Length: 226
Image (cartoon, rainbow, N blue to C red; front, top):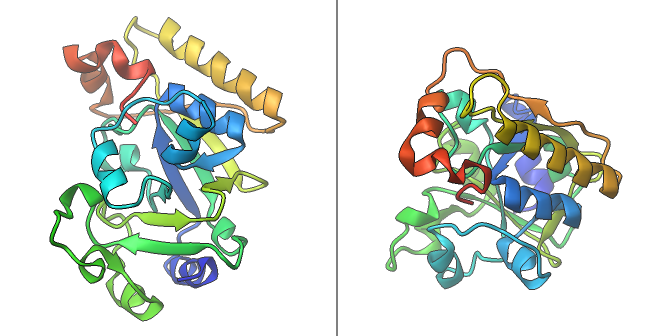
């Protein structure tokens, strides 16, 4: 499907923004590259990124070079941390309509981690606008936008609306971890000429503080899982 087809369907359902969560480490690389880059492009360009548990299957299924986005803010939706990372890029949904004509945009029926080796493309994706229009469920976490471009990146351009950063309160109040991440992200954006200032996520109530405080996530939160 074309970006315009997806844009029309999402706009009809009042979707205004698209979302991509990532670790601070990977987000700094994305900012440096000037857009949401695929994991393949980040790796091939020599930039840093954190490992994902789905890296192996992404390569196997041929989606290592694709860019993924969500139609909702998962952290806000589940009232808990997004396991892909504490940094959230918020982009205007209109970016879909501005994609190159050669770009292909799909929406998954299932998260690729659930595909298995025997599933066909028909089971993995909505393959045309009619199927998507009838089956899309905004906020269903299995249904992710998959954007495939020749250069394996979706440039921010004028579409980047916000960069939101979690405050895990690992040290109480405004933690040093947060301040370090905020400074690094803002400095990277400034160097790239991106006129978006990082904002702190406001949660009330939310389970993310407990999640970030758990032993398994206390140290890696800055580097994240995506």
